[in-house]
Image (cartoon, rainbow, N blue to C red; front, side):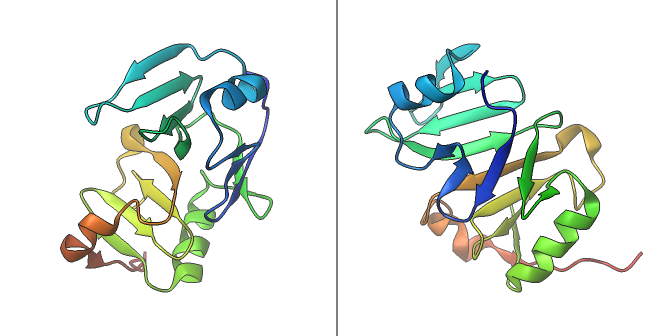
Length: 147
């Protein structure tokens, strides 16, 4: 994979991967994926070391997910730090929790494993506008609990 650092830009992507890029454009930036597969929605996904790229039915990027080990930041801070997670939850001001994820709809970022202490589930993803719309009725308000 040729990208060493991913920079989250809300509702733009995790640069150098931008939402709307085609599969060939992703390969031009990141190289051939380790695994090409189809998810439960019959959509293409590309897996790289610590990075997952999800495509829509038109084969354009709609999701970029990261596992621990990925070098990804928001405003020059690693998103895998607890203090960055807390900062982003406060920055969003309307953080929600649904199906095990803390979803920041204002920022287009979702976290798991940070809020429940499950280090084995730690992951961060960025998504396109509307990606969580069908889950909004099930969402609950989320706030950082004092230590």
